[in-house]
Amino acid sequence: MFEKILCANDGSERAAHALELAIAIAKANGSELHMVSVEEIDYMPEFIEEVREEVGTAARRFHKVLQDARQAARAQQIDIRTHVLTGHAVRDIVLLATELKSDLLVIGSNGHSRFYERMLGSRAERLVNLAPCPVLVVK
Image (cartoon, rainbow, N blue to C red; front, side):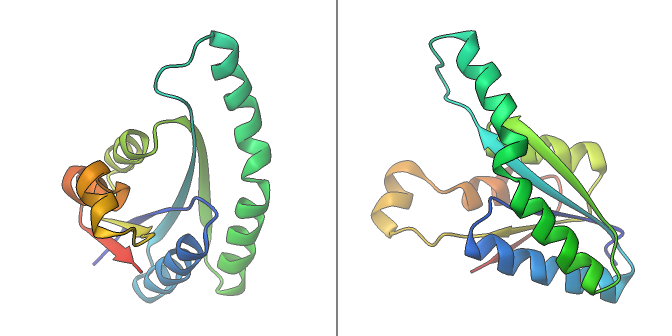
């Protein structure tokens, strides 16, 4: 049913649960599994050096996340392709899901308060609305 699965992972506990579920779904369906981590940059950086610095730290910041993901996938005999991007999480995850022609996007949800979500919105909600494929939100 799902040929390509993309799982977003920011290193949080909820993202780890989402990855576990994505691995299980990939194993059950013989799916190709991708994982993306996005190092966010400020919307209004003051200097180009700030952007360059963020790009340089993204791979280092997500090193342990990538190692853990590869280990979890390997334990289930699943190949995982990892992507580390620098930019804006929602936009870049949607773009990658579109580029990969993903059949399913799996994300973790932080479960912010109603007030927070009403005032600022949630990334999970924006991904559900903007993704080019079905989105599985793991709490």
